[in-house]
Image (cartoon, rainbow over all chains, first blue to last red; front, side, top):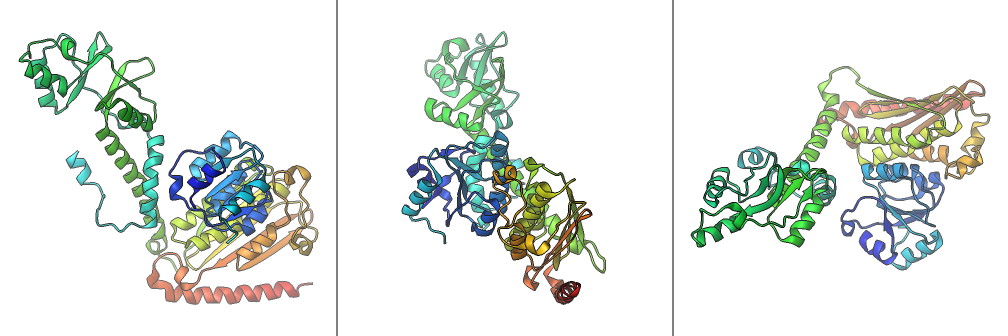
Length: 114
Length: 357
């Protein structure tokens, strides 16, 4: 499963610059809004689902080499976060759906906690 | 093109590594990043509407171009290509004026547009070249698919070379500088409450370690530990603090120092889930009470010294295994011995600290 499939099936909005999402294959998934838990729990190349939208999610994603961050409930990262994400090569995605639903659908698509 | 390109470091015998595979998607990124004016040909050879087609022939032959914008009184009025010239030749009418054969409806491109716009236009209009104009509509250059290919290759080479050169320089630092014991010290000043820059120091440290030749695992462990420590300075201190990282081939020592308020009960602070963070900070997702625990998990040795009212010093150490050491592998024997000794000394120090009442 590639990031392209996930973006299409979950109808996610890409907030950062376009790239070849079909070349990115997330290895696992993780969901939490507590950054320290993400630091402890998210695996490399995983997808992180959160409703946090401030610039620090980019720092966390970059330090952990995450594949992408899905920001739920329509929370919109501020422009500085998006600029930073582009600099760090982090993919930021957005959805109006709640975390529970996004995680459920990712699980249905076959993504696991590794 | 020949001269400039063949001297470049593009090699076809290179095995496709992860890094090279990354470059493939980088090409697509570059199509958005690079601007038309960065890759276009400028200045551009132009012709006037009253020039004869025979003069266009001479220009095309001498300048080795296959098309040229037609400009009258500074304004772009058309474009003439080699196809138009062939038509004139077939009709044996090379004495005719350019205005008779030129294409009048010209699609133009703005100089500040990303290259992807040029690619889209080439696809939809099926023309071979597009005149480039500035915001005032004045002709500033011309772009062909060849210009884009060259521009992208040049940018890729720059990217690749810059990072390779940086890595090369940094990874040889420890061999190039001779001393009995060389270390590199990085210092960062962290401001209290500066969430906007939270994680910047950790990102820079992680990148520095990768350039110095650290394994991704070591860089990641350091990155996580220092991020937590950095956020502690931002969230919990009175006046912010300092991060100091001392890098040696066999070990990394990371320290944060602040001048208050100090930790009342270190054991309690180490308890997972315990946090003194205010609600405003928790709403941002910090203050999970996991920070110090995460640090402990990532480093080989950790020590906190804190006095209420005076401040806190947090010391974190990572020891590299022989195969993980920075710098030249030839001297690993010596470094391994040193790392072993450092580990033993740290254990000893930790025991001493534990026995202090």
